[in-house]
Length: 235
Image 1 (cartoon, one colour):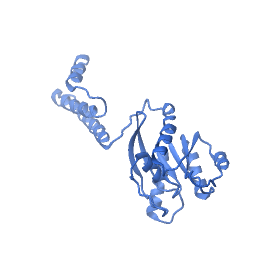
Image 2 (cartoon, one colour):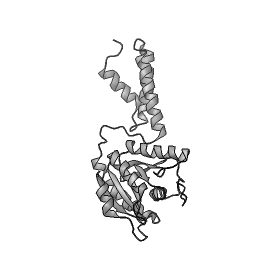
Image 3 (cartoon, one colour):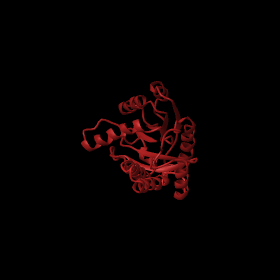
Image 4 (cartoon, helix red, strand yellow):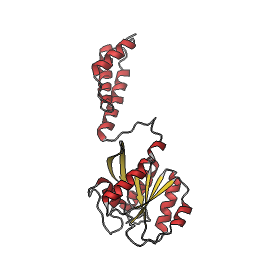
């Protein structure tokens, strides 16, 4: 889930509200967030990776531009987008740049109208007319973290049934990524030792042990018994 918006729209405050902690630095200075910040939370039984991104705008700062490029890249890789807009300000060029990016990404989007504690100045009907993607709208105030988290959790969970995750392997930690890479390496090693049953079995066992880290606990001995009973190895 990628959190995007112009600088100072409240993206980092939104991340902190969802985590119920001060994970991201919040400042009135534009361009404070220059790189992505990633955290994993659980919402209604689903693991959700949150990605807080640099504010999307034109910038002469090389480091900030790299962060903005990563922000746009995150739109390609996420399943849901939180597009954050400042409800207390009229739409401006940076907002329309964000809308263009959202339309190009063609991903389900939750339009978060932040700062609803202030007098609204954003032209909502204009915003709606420019959006060409599936979206829902949520007005919120990140200063009230618990209420914000409750509202967002409900909105995000509405998208879960629509996401095609049946054929995707979702990795939620570096440890899982490492385990999968190790399992692939061991399977490649096993392929290289098809003529030597002892070495082949050793690498298959190592691959299974690594794969166990990705799924439910499974006794390695049970898996090996099943494998050797159903397949004839060494021929």
